[in-house]
Amino acid sequence: MDLNALAAFCSKFGRQLMESGGEIYRVEDSIHRLTQAYGVPEAHVFAIPSCLIVSLTPAQGQPITRLCRIPAHGIDLDHLEQCNALCRRLCREVPPPEQALQLLDDLIVTRPRYSNAAVLFGHAITGGFFTLFFGGSVMDFVCGCLCGLLIGLSTRFLTPIAGSNAFFRTLLSAALSSLLAQLLVLSGLGHSADTITIGALMLLVPGVALTTAMREIMAGDLISGLSHTTESVLTATAIALGTGAALALGTLL
Image (tube, rainbow, N blue to C red; front, side, top):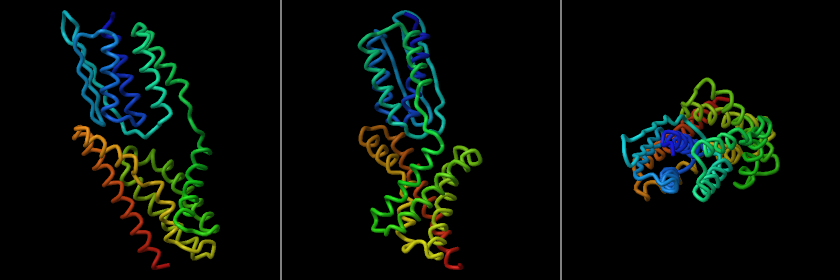
């Protein structure tokens, strides 16, 4: 068996898990299960949110190590589930590493992508329904949809400009959404600026990141847990600063 091909596959597979939002323990455990299924005598996996290292040691010879830099990423639970299913299949069938790599490439190519219109619609309807959840009226629902749509547009527009700097992207999105909520209420379309603002800002709340951070801290992955906790705190700070700036500006209108 070609350990170089297996190491290349494991590093690429681990990267797919991490870029889909997989937890650190899931990434390390999945790669360990794969190396055990392929009969690797000794394997070491180290993962943090920005880096993945896979080292395989044959019975005779030098260790083979692969290192991957993990860029800023989001969450794709559907792709994560497909990768998990592929891992279970490979552990059961144990095809050659080259064939396993081809299966992973096919999975990446056929990965479904939502259109821009679908993503923006999701932002709009989520902002509207959260506004209803917090006690808004029907007109507040419409305003919440508009604010959610603005968050979706600003996020997509600011991503090429801010790049991986989510702090400023979140800050500006929160500010624009809060300012629009106040303008809609002043124009008479909405009734409660606070309800509309809170409903739309739920799109920016880092709930999954904070939940993942707590899970990883309890599992002993302190570096990853603290990293996700810091990310959540910075995101919450950006939301607060953006909203506060918009509210201060709104008092002048």
